Image (tube, one colour):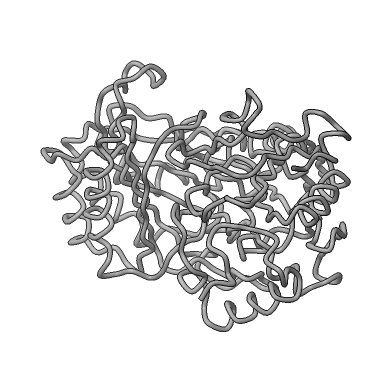
Length: 450
């Protein structure tokens, strides 16, 4: 299997017979047990072409992947090659054009290490270990999104290898239908080998978090909710109930404790930002980290785990967040409950995220004005039923206001109709049928499924 690739470069293919098999097939969420026929590690677009051609000769499908954050949403990988883009590294920044080009293996930490010194801010993910390509193809709801929209619509060009084994560069003028589908359609149309996207000049960024003991959650969450009523697009805030596990890694003042946390990103100066969030700061947080920061610091704000972990998640996009919904959340996940979820997050979206972008791709906007994202740790697999029930209880608090689903937050297979309007979904299916008629490429939430 894929023997011709092995002959070209010995370490380009890993199978179950190899010592590094388990490491090669591991996803970021350790609950995803990926069992492909083989794992391929191309180093450039030419080797991707070779994988595509060899897989077709061997009768195998191809599932492209970098970090595997959405691995739980992939169907059975039997009969498929897991194509890992880890080795395809490289980030180039053009400060004058405010343009960034990344190879498929780049993560957001790689990008901000080069854009921050250039004074540029991309629409980055919430952790430096998130892969740029997967995040961008699925939408990309950044801390800067209320001002600048979804990251996928900042993409200006995409390089990919098609099912025919052709290496293409697509943009608004070259194969515009394919370019439209790739931006927000989630993949499944080829193997993306590189992306080009716009970055933004934000002279000052005021960001950080305010931590309160979880016993104060009611006053904190309601104060935060009041801020959102008049928040400008330059301000993104979220509130969450955070239970820090008592394990090595977290800072000692937080380890093993529970907090009500408000996180803030304001694209402007400190004085204006502090005034906007004064109702929260006036409550007197136990700890706060708010300051003018470099763009690269935004990757650490949300404190996502830097290494793969076993977790179960769920989410809901909401059209509104009334005070009664916050009370409902506190009743199932607040102080005094038996909630075991590590984080129950409420984030304001809206702004440019909610407005259809000009010349947008398949995902023109993110429905709703808020979302909840909840996560439970599964260090003990026996906890899965309890965690699942608590996720359902938490997200159920916003179900009366549900506005849709978000591709990048869905950790199990869902059909395209969960994410796209009928007209967009029909167009995506037509483009899929043209560019991948035999279903060579396997991706999360395939648009070809009714």
